[in-house]
Length: 252
Image (cartoon, rainbow, N blue to C red):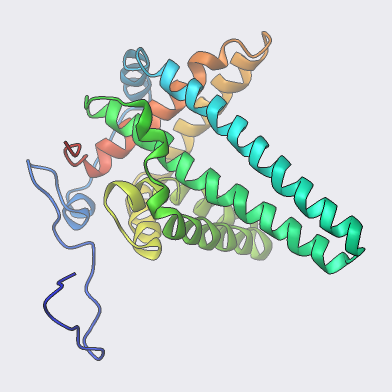
């Protein structure tokens, strides 16, 4: 990371997992080595107590995101449709669909990282800011790479044998926030998440089963309850992340 020294191309790669901690926040290696534990009931109780103050930011962020996504895909889809109609070129249509998919990914993953960070900030009692949701687009490329590798490995696990796919689907839950909060590379984030969650895989799986049931039940009365249940899930993920890795102080 030095600007003054040209790296040796034959040197062993350095690891972002080396200590990055300050203010008593453990490095990733320290967090993995020290271990952790939690109670599903206590984690949900703490998360519920922290939902207040997050609903407007999270729900508002989702609304802004979907409006922007719909507008962007509508405009790009319209332009592609016009050129396809004029040229009657099916290749152009396929290219257009790929571009729309890439655009959606480029918007979705940094947004989801921002939502994750709102939950993490709230879990650590750090100041919340609506701009947090939209402040991680500078890491779009590593976030997309992380998501693509994650999905490929999960799908591969599902195809080969269902159980490995389910295992990885849970084990990689914290990879996206690790890319943003700790600046890990995609593979480092995936491995750090997997190694951490594997320590209490069944408990983490149970936590998200309970959260999923809460969201399903909250959606029954016209979806009104999701105004509380979605922020609860976001904050619960933040509390889980803080419990495992700790949280670096927010940048001033």
